[in-house]
Image (tube, rainbow, N blue to C red; front, side, top):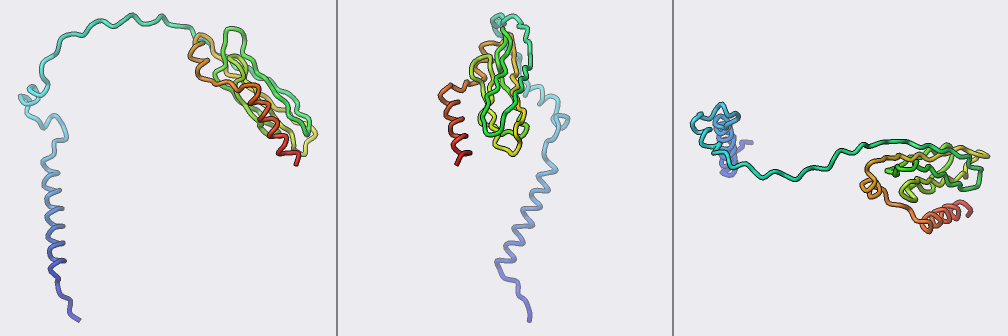
Length: 171
């Protein structure tokens, strides 16, 4: 069986050769460094320096920022939910927190006010008791910024989360 060259095949091969050849030719003319540009042309591209701008306002004075970490642990008896509060010292605000679970399950974790990070831990494991804890990351010197960074869990929301958790484990 003898194969024939169809007109569409010829046109597509010619188009491919032209496209690849054109790309190769263009590649040799690309400017990849300012050293390839004539110095007199570069000078015209830079333009003249404009007038000096106005003096900006005086910045705020530097604040001393302090950091502390507060860790509190509690024992969680089997079949119960226990809340653990880690409270920042006076003059510090909570910026975040952490949790130590042990064999417990996390019910919720969050800031309850601007100084306290609280976690609720449930022990529905096979262990008669298990230790767990809360860690508050505290900062001083940026009260407004730090307060805005952490949104507090209200008492009603915390109670609701504990009730939902207990209901799901007592079925």
